Amino acid sequence: MIITLLLLVDTTGQMPCIMLAVITHEFGHLLAMSLFKNFPRAIRLLPFAVDIEMNNSITMSPIQEVILHSAGILCNLLNICIFINIYRVYQSEYFIILSAAN
Image (cartoon, rainbow, N blue to C red; front, top):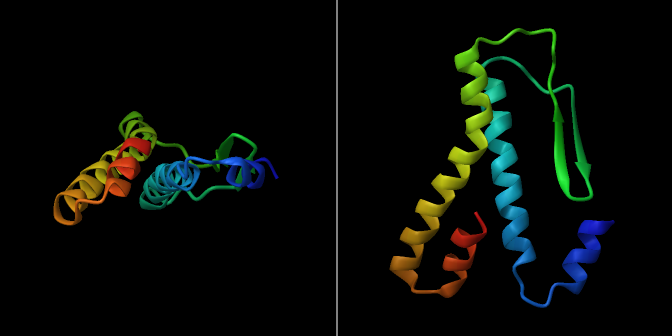
């Protein structure tokens, strides 16, 4: 409900960009979890966050945990690179806003 309210009152048009950044970030964590065969027990959409509850029955090495926790940031960095390169081609400021949201 709060996300809907934020979309309705957003006069800048940046809320969808921020939502894309959040979805991409969390997708990075989910992708890393699936690579390590540690699928989430639950995914909850909270008013100002996304909560991914991990399956604690599977133990992970410290390296796997670092990769898992870094995966969201790496996806955001990848988005920044993609949107800046798209901006270079199309010269639309929308892509700069998308890269800044990440």
